Image (cartoon, rainbow, N blue to C red):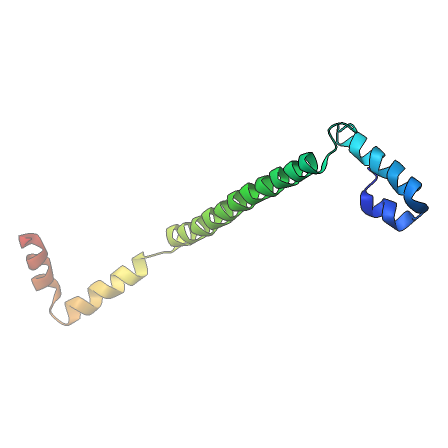
Length: 106
């Protein structure tokens, strides 16, 4: 697709630029009657709005993936050795039985 930037870079005077501009408008589905400043501004505003919506969706998806990474790591972590060591330490201090009785009372 020929762009206005390409047309400017190619040079060739105002007639050449005008022809390329008309080609770009045709590719966008615009005619001379509808290719006004207002309609182009509306198209630009719509494109900016769509871009912002997509950016929000992308950020939400990235946050979701980060949360999933944390959850996956938590699920894969082996808690059993830590729990066994905790039980050994509390039993060694003589606190295991009293902690179990206290937990049973609640």
